[in-house]
Amino acid sequence: GAGVSQTPSNKVTEKGKYVELRCDPISGHTALYWYRQSLGQGPEFLIYFQGTGAADDSGLPNDRFFAVRPEGSVSTLKIQRTERGDSAVYLCASSLTVGGSTEAFFGQGTRLTVV
Amino acid sequence: GESVGLHLPTLSVQEGDNSIINCAYSNSASDYFIWYKQESGKGPQFIIDIRSNMDKRQGQRVTVLLNKTVKHLSLQIAATQPGDSAVYFCAFKAAGNKLTFGGGTRVLVKP
Image 1 (tube, rainbow over the protein chains, first blue to last red):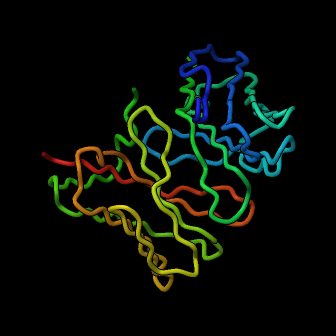
Image 2: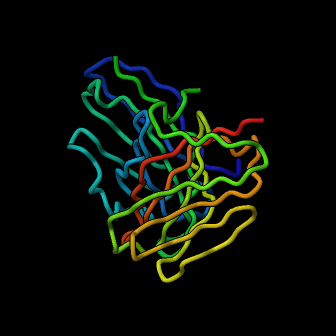
């Protein structure tokens, strides 16, 4: 596919459980971003990767959230001990490079519901 | 899919009319200002951006205006079409490439 792919599209989990959300960026894009969007609000930045390394993780809300991108392509956002407040749409985006007018392409998101 | 922006300000516009969506910002350090369109159940889609040293940029049917004096950004859509119905977000890019999104505006196009 030509776009950013996120799986699963929907995830329902019980409070306290661990979840992993996957993002497949556009091939060749070196920068990858994770955002979280609550109902009625704009996306909020969580973390971004340049290659394999997390260049800025200042948006991660606490240490229950962690993301990896071991080979510089696919990324996984991991949430431990999920809480009901973690329910949101988690968006992934990728861009060819970092800086300047580099368009970020978003996936369709993973809707996480913690019950 | 889930509707985005159930409690967002709404702009209702007649098909064929022009739409203007406004956004205020506070961070003067932004390098780029960007407009995104988000349809229900989808991720944001890039529409157009403008660099901080410009005050106007035109695309296909869209124009973005930047007024740095009053820290105001607007998106004008010419001849609005039913496919333009969506939630529109302004976003700001500063050093480090992360985007900060503003509040969204829902646009409803009436046939």
